[in-house]
Image (cartoon, helix red, strand yellow):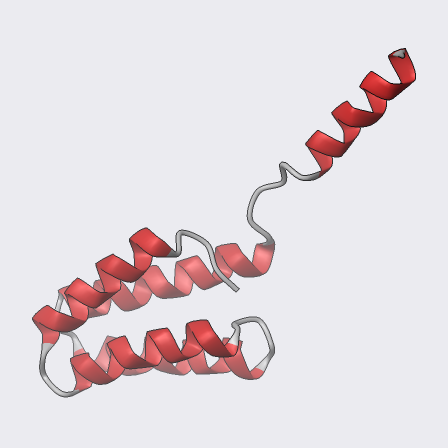
Length: 99
């Protein structure tokens, strides 16, 4: 009985890990992007878009999340900063950490 409880406890702990290093770095890259959008800073937007593209090319950011972020970036590049910011906050709420 004691072994079974210990085993179940270890299973629970194994599944309770926090975000991975890649997920943390993706979040940080996203926060940089959100700041550029909030400040309506096209130069920083381009820099942050390159960082996101590099993470995707390195396999550290999934295709699906890359598409989501590209939609936000394109909205900002089109000059619709307000909608880009709304989309970014919505993304952050839905995807606190992501690959």
